Length: 255
Image (tube, rainbow, N blue to C red; front, side, top):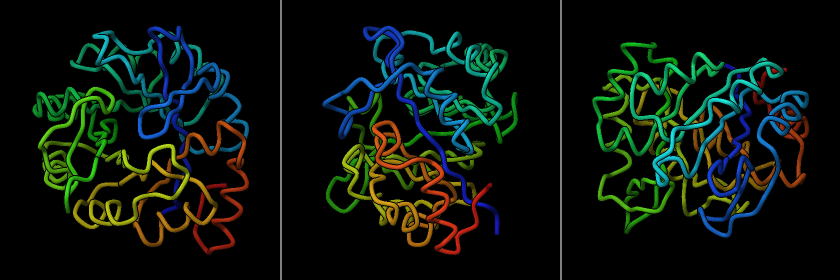
């Protein structure tokens, strides 16, 4: 069995907030959490497996994403860095890879132009292309949202995940908007639905709260990786505490 990854997400507002990490609840009620590159280094020293930088206002504000932040971070953090927000082209992605990113994450641009997934995958390899899905439950199904959760689409999250895989996505970053920031647990039904339906890794995101919420996302949700933000940023748990707990649950994690 492959080791399960623990990932920290740094939601960055590089526009109005001038380079801050922020965190909200259900993509609202935003709070300041810290400086991106400083927090990334701290989590690296704690033993986190990967770091995801998401420029949450890049698409809305029509800005390019965080090249300078990635440059600073990659000089002192030696684990995979995934970067998303405002990536619309091969050139946008190339700038981030040149700055030190290992993977890029796309959401709004992919939904608006699905062939972008194929172009990026052909250029950089599918292992470097993560498709983010911000899903909100509508009735009995989940629909995709774009522009940092600000705009609802009628695109079914399950169908989109399957299509993204066919187009060349190497991984799905799956966030439940309903659970995001609540610390009440991952959406296990949604996570399992997507995990069972694709053959690429699924990262569970949104709702990390208790230590058992991480193990449930893996055991019941069948996630390949679990992502936390608030639970780490505001010192509820450390990365080590989560890993130690998962080991006791007989879940293989990286040391």
